[in-house]
Image (cartoon, one colour):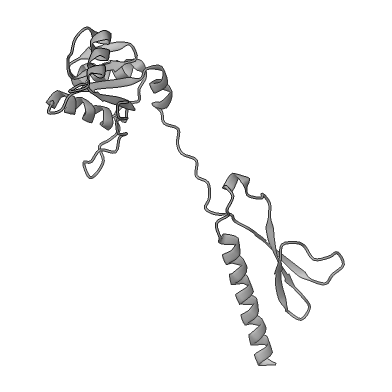
Length: 190
């Protein structure tokens, strides 16, 4: 009798573990396509025998039933909206730069620190970019920063800060504890 009870307990524990493992397996469908409201039911009969099913026992049966929700994959976590995304659509930021330019580096670092999405275009040896810069600004100056239609030749932090504020970009975040940049990386020029 003792062995039978021990065997029943062991088998019911094994069934529970297998059912939970099966329920925790990632689905091959996307979480939003996974069946909603699916449940696992633990049936226990009069003698204490346990079975797991995906449906309720027939009406009038003498089973005790416990309900367990089935989880599909990992929970979906919604990302926080980027406060600068809408502003960037209306007032895109473009940084025209050249290598070995201290002011270009400072402008890039400031934009990254402030988490402003921007496109960086290297005007060093690219005639197409040089012509584009000359057409938009009338000169070949690095750094040149465009915020929408506004043109800034050279880099002055307070001026750039004011222009970004006026366009509606969110203010600078507190610096990272490790001192590293956590801002977005510039998009490469086409």
